[in-house]
Image (cartoon, rainbow, N blue to C red; front, top):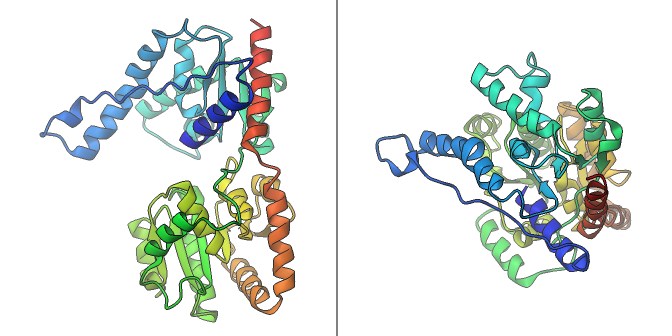
Length: 371
């Protein structure tokens, strides 16, 4: 979500400086329990974050409610802040509905009573927004399905592609990526790398990623997998059980320029999620010339379009056949592979942070006109 705030602020400041002055507000984390040595560090940090989110941040922004004409909460999971703002002056970007699932569909996401109460408070703030931006049509349709907003208060404003994501080499970032790949394969630049980027949330279906990779690896033992965002202990154990743990390189979250370098040297991006709000790795990978295989769900088809290949959710055989077939195409049909890469780059070019800022500025104007 920081990426969204940073890129939007940058383009609003550079492209719309004549009509709006943009200020990013990020209150500092106030530490309480994390200062005390008697508490479990992780539990203390979680408690401090919760107190900041529900108490300190609303108080902080309430003290500044008269400083700005429009407030934009770029992460819907902080929508409790809208309760502290003047009516009709808050815009919220909704990336997905996961935050609200335990209230909207409690049978699908059972949670303790205190958690549901907290979520209900966030949802109440969300519903007070003057206008909601969704990053995909699929997310907009979910909002309409649950009756959270009337259609005229929802606009689809897709995410953009970071400027670092391009097919062009970046010597500094490429050297940093080389260091990350050291020791994995005799020739990291020649090894067919499969790539997965994102969190380890259950909806990402990284169990399917590991199983699909293991199936492809049995056909093509030279193939490797790089996971940006890591794997859980259970997922690593699954990889060990399938005898592919030593063929997987786990990396933490990376700076965008280094991540772009890894996209460029990867043969394919695999995106196995069974639910998404947008699927940013798809357009980032395609912008770098890395073709994509994604789960066949509406939002990923909306983002990936015709250049991406799609597999049935959780169908390991389908993933194996599709990925292995594309890797063979890469070796046996260079001309066709080049066309595939070009089509992906053309698709990614449709997703621009400059356009995101232009549409967002229009929404700010409409909110101001209704005041």
